[in-house]
Length: 170
View (cartoon, rainbow, N blue to C red):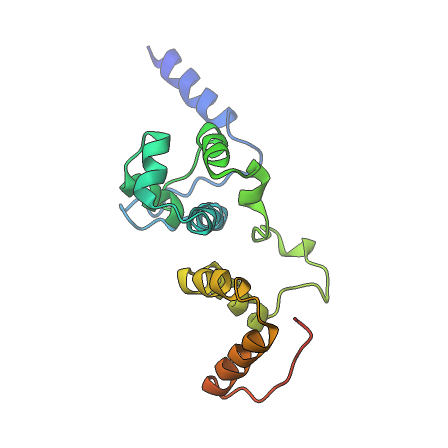
């Protein structure tokens, strides 16, 4: 039966895409890091779920999963398959593409000079994706009095010791 074994080995090697690198050097359990795209997609699932005010348990119920599985998806520990991503999009009311928006580029050669996100902007985006950032923004936009909103911005700036009067954002 050596012919069958050799044929199966050949088939498994030939099924790999060109440029595939077999990283068998670090086979220890837990030593592999999540793929940045999986982490990004998971963070977008978490962001949308939080935006809707939905718990991990409730999302899991709608998908027939445990909240632990949702946690693993959101952290990028477990990859989300195509059909599951489609189901998530349906439940969360977004197109599948939503999960890939602002995804990290896999090849730095695609970056265009002058358009890369600056560290300060990255911190702002990360804050807006956090629970506090989301709750703060949802509450802030419900304030109808413009003077009250301006007073809150001034208060936050003074607490942050920020003397800048950068009104470019607003």
